[in-house]
Length: 406
Image (cartoon, rainbow, N blue to C red; front, side, top):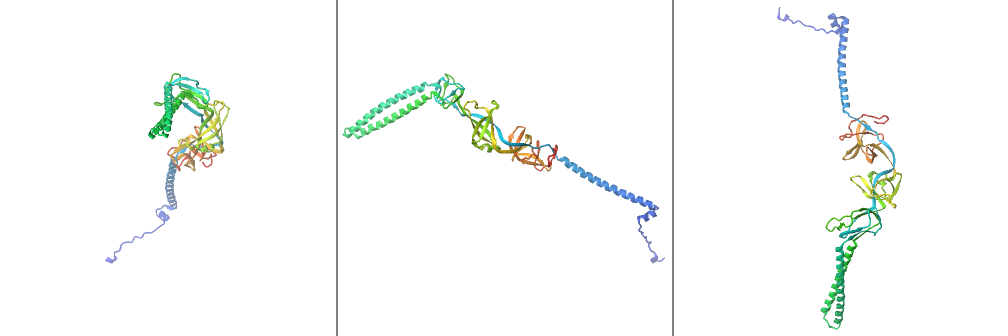
């Protein structure tokens, strides 16, 4: 066989449909249907498996995120009626209150009034026996008498020398000497007179008198007690005198109510020992400055007390009328956050925390009055964490029905 007649066999690939392939394999039409159903079932299993896994992952992610959002308890501010007046604690003090000391050294000779006694200005309270001062006064008076005698002689001598000088019987120098001696003697008399007056004043201090009308509230001495005027040591108080015809009542007004503390405004007092009784006074003055530590304005209310019914040192409730009604809300004290930038309250708004600056009015102990910053519809967080910041996602654990927006 010739070389050119050698040829490779040609393999012809015949394309066929699935139905034809099934026919060649002897499956028939029903076999084709079974294979198609199996393929569809396999595809459905794969699709639903992937879909369910994706859904489970999304659900797990959502549940994890929800679990990370903390629950908080909230309360809603209680609206209070417009405030017409405020009641503040006051400290009652005597209008004039002073300790009385001795100005002379010696021994207490006698005293005339004890505690609770009413005295008038100038009345003698006690006497001090001071023999040293008495002897010094006698010596000073004797020295003054001698100086006055010398002055009389100097006046006569100077007059004689001036007359003799007119006739040139004495020299000018001797006359000037006599006049100079007269002037020196006059100065000596003035000095000794002043010393006598000083000792007379010291002797008058042996009698201790009341400096004003009042009541003796303390007596810290007795007959025979050594009295030291305090030249070399701390003096000892002998009596304590208080004028209670008018009383001063000091009250610290919170800064938020400082506009109610106007001089001339009327004020009233109530005391526990006088139930049902009201004492009227007038706000006379303020310190005109807010205490940086307590954020209050020191105010003085003067109350007439002619009968002495009110006692200094008593505790009183001072009622001050506000210029107009002030609306406020009340929240528990455990809702407050003390931050460096000021007092804050945490509320939940749109599912997130928000720190609201507030102004505090009266403190009721377990609750406080909030003058500004909150509304009755605000969901206020109780016991907020110190690390809480605005924007933190939160969920309300105890939502109240009817609270809109929460």
